[in-house]
Length: 410
Ligand code: HEM
Image (cartoon, rainbow, N blue to C red; front, side, top):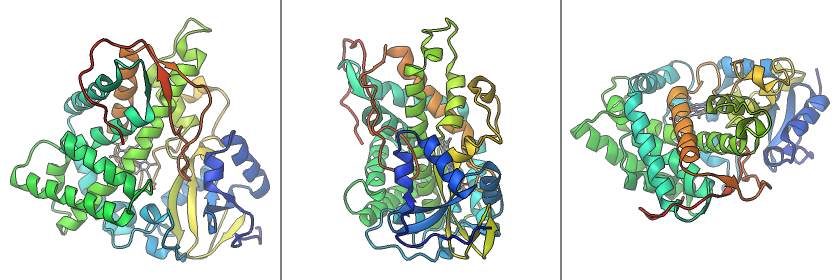
């Protein structure tokens, strides 16, 4: 066991340096060589935590909620007021599955599982196709677009808010609030309050006139004790979906546009979209560093001593690239499902199927309609400690003749 522990200001690597590194996997291997399967990092400069790098150790954390809890009240850290980590890591007073453990988590999770199980896939696919077509209409005549700002971000939000029964105007309002909540400008507290209000209005409207959507399933569920729990659960689901979907869409598009196995330039046998989706889940997981669990008690993980109250981030990108579970053969790995990109254990993603549906339709709709070419092979990664995705994805294509709509921009 190593006696070394994360020291404040001790020259630890910050998560955002890992997600922004030119070769993230090489950086993760370097950390693993130095520390073994668990390494000290900064969640943001000056805020210490542990990054779990080994596949077995990430699974242990995800599955052992009695030791590694989700409830942020176990965290000993007091964040500075202006910390960008508040929205995700220390959301005071939120009552949702994401922040709960044990029986409380199971009570709050059940309605979400049942709601997703009842989702009509044909209806959802039609909704997503409509969202994608509308967004493509808005830039199809221009011959160029940024597929992050003008497409992926809006598809993700409008598709998921649509599943909850929001119309496009409400979806765009929610998207703007989410930008504020996650520190992309403006007052995060006011943005969260505005988001809660839009969602509460939808809960009340749905109760008066239930439709066939996720909100209708949630408002009728006996597990919830009050509307605050429903609102907070909806907000967390809409936000949890967003960055994951944007990242998965962006990474799959880049793969389809640059990898010769998909462009068909070298073998003459093009691999398909489903292969690209699976390879991306393995190699570029939508959430590279998954926040967070908090140690309930002193314990040992990998070779390090963890103290009660420490924050633990699950290194999904590192775990997926752990040589103990991964070969270098992408073709083989496409059918190997032991990646951790959807999580495992009690908090594993309840929306794998709809998530995949959204990403598949988003990529398909674009590729079927426009002859996309990347306008710039260089990538600038968005500054996120959790995900690695391009800040912009500029493409060119043969413009279509008619414009139908004005652009939606986050
Ligand atoms: C329709 C889109 C999606 C929705 C509505 C959604 C919703 C959620 C919710 C509500 C949770 C919290 C579960 C809990 O705490 O019990 C969650 C967890 C999670 N989701 Fe999703 N999700 C979506 C898409 C995705 C995608 C595309 C990915 C990545 C491929 C993903 C990966 C995850 C992961 C890794 C967790 C786990 C977290 C953990 O163990 O802490 N999700 N998701």
